Image 1 (tube, each protein chain N blue to C red):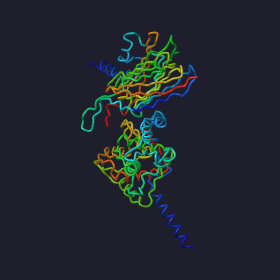
Image 2: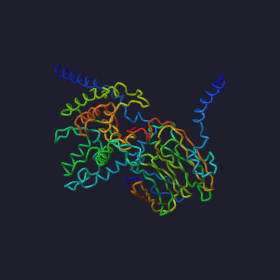
Image 3: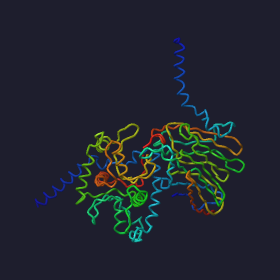
Length: 259
Length: 145
Length: 105
């Protein structure tokens, strides 16, 4: 009886310790859309005029296109994306059981292409990869972010958190300095957001096109005059997992509209 | 310079920027060219533009012209002008009685805080305009990334 | 060029219907520079036209002053059942088109 009580107490303590790690409590997390002006927020919610939907529509066509040596399309295995892909994007980045690697949604789609369709992977940040990723993520619109950091993902989560807190670049800043310690405050004419990932791939006004979360992270690195790691670097994916954990419960908004 | 003249001079320069800002009564000379010398009156046209742009790369704009849009009385065209963009004639929209309603929505690029002007050419040969100011902090065309 | 058109699938004769168009196009201003500092050539959609059963009911001259992935919303009177055809051409001469049917009762 006492051993059971001890076990329960230890579990509760561990859970509490886990909860204490959140610098921004779950009831205070805000999507990037909360930091937009009314006009851009309305644009994001306009299913017709949201420019990101141009990529989603292309993705929808690609879903049915036979690809590679297999001549199979995504639909051949996954049928109707509206049902089969619902909730999928919310669980990424995720450990791929076949390879043991941590993959984000784009890499998972590429792994499918290579392993199951006998096709070439799409280049990072290509129009094709952005379109199909936006289409798949769109099917999870409204679904709360719920990435797992259990088991083999834990090491990646720890690396991601360390990356989040690492000071870097000419300005010697870490992500936490702006997005944890100073979110909500003004930086020139803008309000600093919490840096949440739930709207990506997103149509960013500054780019005047749709871009991935990694493109946004690279822009942040450039902003603090730090070295931009190449697209696809495992460091980015670890950071994406940390960001997903940090965003737990926020609804997927892909395709988001951001400044 | 005598003190009185000096003070009058200062008052003059102080007055100038205020007048320039509140002058939607003065038609942008570039926009006036549409009428080819004919008078352009303020009225009938209404521009809806945010007071502050989220981002100069894509600003929503709505231009409405009060017109029955019949064969006898309709809007032939609407011409949109910017006073600060590198290209001043932003767009022209050609309507006609088949439009049913003289209203256009679009998204424009704005290179800095400025006044946007819309001139409408009516079927009776008259020209009407409206102008709207907007503050833009993140400019299109000029703020590159 | 990908494009999205939104019109009601059906309308009553004489009804004024809303037409929305969204075209995927960078509307390159000609003022931006690439990674090595070269000016990226201007390329914008210069004309957008809408024909209703073959008759032009709307036309727009666009410029670099229109945002990337241009969005235009206008109105037209539901005349007869048939098709609205949209045509556009950019500075490089690339043409795009899209059509949508409308049933008028």
